[in-house]
Amino acid sequence: MADGYYRACGRPMAALLPTATGVSKALGGLACAYAEGSAMLVISGGQLSHLPGIDTAPDLAGAERNHPRKTLKARLVTESATALPTLMRTAFSTMAGPCPGPVSIEIPVAVQGQSVDFAAVSVRASTERSAVPAGQVAQAAEWLAKAARPVIVAGAGVLIGEACKELLTVAERFCIPVLTSANGKGAIAEDHPLAGGCVGQSGSACANRLLAEADLILLLDSKLTDIECRAPVIWIDADLADSSRVGQVELGMQGDTCSALAALAALVSTAQYHAISLQRSAYLKHLSELRANWEARLDKERADESSPFIVQRPMAELRAVLERDAIVVVGTGNVGDAMVQMFPVFSPRTYLSSTVFGAQGWAVPAAIGAKLAMPARQVVCVVGDGDFLQSMQEMAVCVMHCIPVLFMVFNNSGYSSLRDARTQHSGRYARSEFNLPDGKPYSPEFAEVARSFGLESWRIEHPYQLGPALHKALNSKGPALVEVMISRESRGALDAFSDEVP
Image 1 (cartoon, helix red, strand yellow):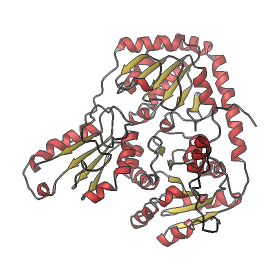
Image 2 (cartoon, helix red, strand yellow; image 1 turned 90 degrees about the vertical axis):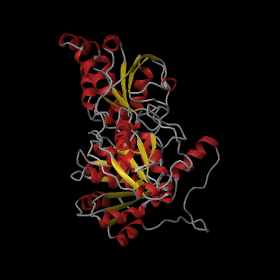
Image 3 (cartoon, helix red, strand yellow; image 1 turned 180 degrees about the horizontal axis):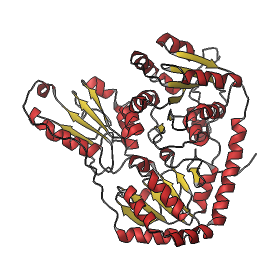
Image 4 (cartoon, rainbow, N blue to C red; image 1 turned 60 degrees about the vertical axis):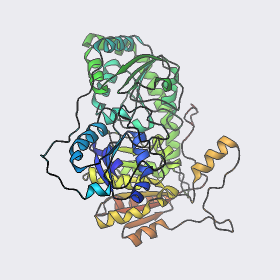
């Protein structure tokens, strides 16, 4: 919940875990927050250090973001109540600094019983960020102006660093297509003429083609670990410690991405802009054609009238009924992969997912946190049935506290993403469906379960039911659930490395 809260509004939330038992249940959430760079404060009455997955060494530099043993940016322990003010200041400056992440403060039982007098102190995190050297900015601007087929690839750090406005200015001044990583989705409105989509296996064919053809890549707060970069890279990041995972870095610029982008845009005069625009007219026409081809492929899936559904059809209906700035919190598996491709996002911090860590059960509480952070926004949790089973009991929190989240559960009676991945990589079929002993499919009636919790709910089996049910659910005064029956044969993401057009 604290992770979803931070990603929706950019402000950290504190989680209180009074005992070691509570801490052990938080490991998945902590690991996901660390991998995605979400700031949160965990106040623990138990010991985090004895649990698996907790590295006791502070990670104040934010390096090794995907290190499997890391779940905390720093672990602070107090031996006395008098040390708490200082520790709080350290915690805030660490968790919300240039490389955000979760920080814990352990308060042993003996310390909890102490009392101490102290003067009120501010625990606000410092907003100071290091600037990129002007010489490097000038060099980057020169290369970007001369390149024939440059692309910008934006990661989650652009969202975290509130640099989306500056990103758009640079893209427009230099006439460069903007691609995003999956967790950078929303850094640019995806209906903007310069938006090329997400890169990677579950991205778009348009984005992957542009990246493959690029002669220069401006990489912003991303590692691009799942794809190959052949072109020279200009990399701007708050932490350049692990450049081996980026590709051919010709220019590494460590510092604040927002100010670096603003400085880049300022170097383009009006005359230069007109010259670059004329020079790149054919390139931008190519971008438009690639986008049209990709949209034609998606339109075929959006219009599918099968019953049970393929996953893409309900996603298109959801986008049609939601407000432009609605927040969508997405689970893992085939549903998450398809959402990256099928669901256009128009505003920063409106698409939240556990892309890097892939934690089952993350989406439901994260959606509650997002709604608490932005109560005036529509908030929808889009999740598969296996994922929903991990944390569906949190529907009770929504009912007790009148938190109007819409849960959209895609029910195909199993973990089809695990089945598909195992078959693809090993050639062996893995049974991960939910079946009875006689082989018949098994599934809880999620709509009925939701009603028993006190939610309004609908079970959708035919296309004509989708629109009316979603409208009613979004207009509900409290939490609601829409269960959508999905074919077991439905795959998640389309082939994002193929240019095939239907």
